Length: 582
Image 1 (tube, rainbow, N blue to C red):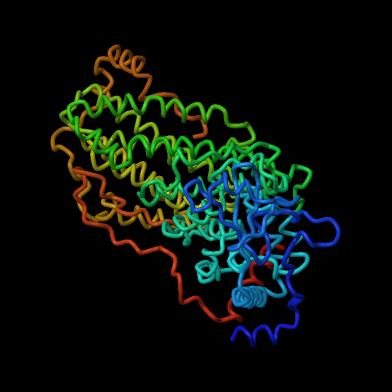
Image 2: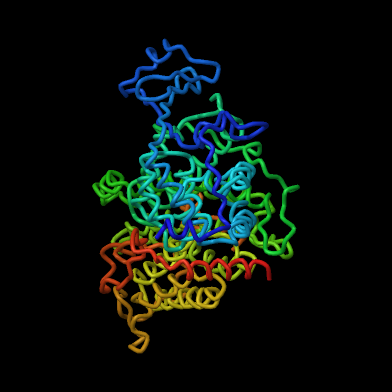
């Protein structure tokens, strides 16, 4: 079928691909590239491999840092960092070209229009490509890409093609995987693990600032590495899995302004485009927020951390708060240092804004920290301490719900990071947790009211952003709303009896409460003024939950059985292009 498609599609560019970018006539950004070479791929030679750095350095390298050896060409990018480059077999090349032509045939004649659509909406806030390099290659022929990358940018064949190239690692393999994982239904923890392995083969976990490769590639590798770093941390959060990337094996330097080749001067004037500067700042601040999230996950959610905190049940809450205090300060500092242009109310006329995803991630991190604290909530604990911690959790939930109401169409129609779908659900889960552990009916009714508002906001907003429907469905099936027709006078785990009046809550030793807060510097701290993904075991959060398991659909991507209907995909491309030109 692939051959027939190639023969009948006369519009395809069929010139033979370039095998070595160093042989290109005239100027090209791709000369001396390491990770994007055509028809060859490289493997990083680690410190304990069969190759020893001291012996490698005895080899006679030429002016390009290359030495031809038996298994492949050794490439030296710094004194202690080497790769072995291997050529791809003719069978691999032929299969790759056939798949590339298949992808291009499906989107013809809209390929370039879809690429432009991607570059002006997604690329500014998820810059895992070098735009000029991408356009240079696509301007010559679609055959210079790897099939998964081209498919990820243009349409839905990426998963079926990804497994073919995992053993021939290139930067484009990681790019394609990250792009696919951003899809609302594309978040796969297994694929994330594969991408981490591919990235390590490419040396993406290393500091490449002094490598002998083009400057644009050094910047690209940094952005791509941090993109994978974020995928790992937020994926671990949303799936409830151990972290795959660890600080002991991570030397990538922080991204800087010079690592982003596009500037405000390159802004696309077309309506509905993303602002380049806002996208750049969003990407940078998402990285720094992710570093705080990683700290939360390491401190509270590893197997050993949970065991450590649980082993001393008598002092569990005290120990928890001592660990939480510096992280809470990190979150507060992160928020206070956000550029004014990233405030949720700062949008430009007829421009999309990716800041909604960033702020949502912040609230998800806050909620995750408090979720860890509430895990040790107990009616037997000190009454004052319990009041402080629950009041702080209440403030975070209220702030997150207030933020949701401030989103505009410019946010809803913009690019959202893959974790956004789960982050919405995590906030909802936290609200249900607070409802389920309420001490009295008044408190339970408050959380039910807040969750109803949260559900309503997303039900309305989901008209503009489809991925939000997941959270609406999750709340609909939660124990809070599962029996709307039943009695509203009772809730799970709530002590029966007269509800505690708010006035009674206010007289619980106010001076002592103030002193506790000052000493701990934690609890009801300043609330920020700005105020998918299958989350496994969403409501199985501990002893307070008695509801039956929720019936949830498996949203993991299907790795096979993709439609072979070219006509269907062709019409889909036409709709996308037509919609973008409205």
